[in-house]
Image: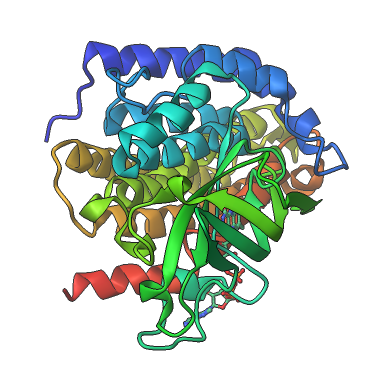
Length: 394
Ligand SMILES: Cc1cc2nc3c(=O)[nH]c(=O)nc-3n(C[C@H](O)[C@H](O)[C@H](O)COP(=O)(O)OP(=O)(O)OC[C@H]3O[C@@H](n4cnc5c(N)ncnc54)[C@H](O)[C@@H]3O)c2cc1C
């Protein structure tokens, strides 16, 4: 397999590396340490990154974006994440849902929602599925169980859906200008047959934002609560057919493909940062009269960190390449599982090498580890692993 990059891919990688080094890295630790979880995002950074194309990178050129391929996406995400995994995710979260606008929305919806998204550097996107009593069961619904899945109720009233209920832990819940919202439109059938996706703009009457969650990792990237009290959403904002949420995009899988690759590439960036930190620290820190690096055990740990990181890089690029060739395989999900194990082991080894300094918040070793915990809640939890393992047997 040929891993060489073309000119466009290299140019995006260089641009991302420069932005990460010059703009993200200098503010990363300070943003991470802001106590108020609603104040951690740096809008100036978002605007600068947006002007360079990082927010709108995956929208096709014909539709006014940059149309970068999957290999480029993986390269850019890893570069940005090396400087700050959560800031990288703020941009790529927009990729995830602008994919879906392109794949599943009508031309009229694209006109109303894609154009403002492209024009506004602070326009970020979100998607609401999780609720107080519905999380994993929306990702892997128990077949036939009508109690599983989202409970946020939507009822038809003329040409509007009327929404009542709450969503929790929604990325960009407190700042997004547009949401893809999963609502229950039929409670008499299982979730997969009774759920609809609506496009919900931030100024929807009856919609308000609740608290912002105080996470230990990914602090730049905010999660909030969404509250709907007789909120009115035009039927014209519905994606696909009523009760057709899980058939979104008429079989288009770009959103799923993207989601798996996204987290794996982001983890790769953290691993790169951890390898670099471990090497720098072990060369500069003296223990027992000699640089830590002289200890064979430390060399072994750094060797393992690099081995795992390079193995992940190969898998991530292979998956990105497969996506670009329209090859659908279980590799995407498996790479995401591997990224969870890898990012957590590599950041743990980095903490060990730093020892007491690993807990010092001005070094950043603890931040890499805190960010890596997120994968346990997202990409590498048991449900996600089950979902992917189940695909192998099909
Ligand atoms: C950083 C971050 C960003 C997020 N962003 C969003 C977002 O933008 N939009 C959104 O809708 N949600 C978002 N979420 C929420 C996330 O999707 C949910 O946390 C996730 O689906 C799990 O739901 P839960 O927390 O209710 O856990 P639960 O479903 O209650 O699960 C708790 C634990 O039990 C395990 N478990 C549950 N059921 C089973 C089963 N049948 N078999 C085996 N194990 C099981 C799970 O794997 C997990 O380990 C985000 C979460 C995080 C951490």
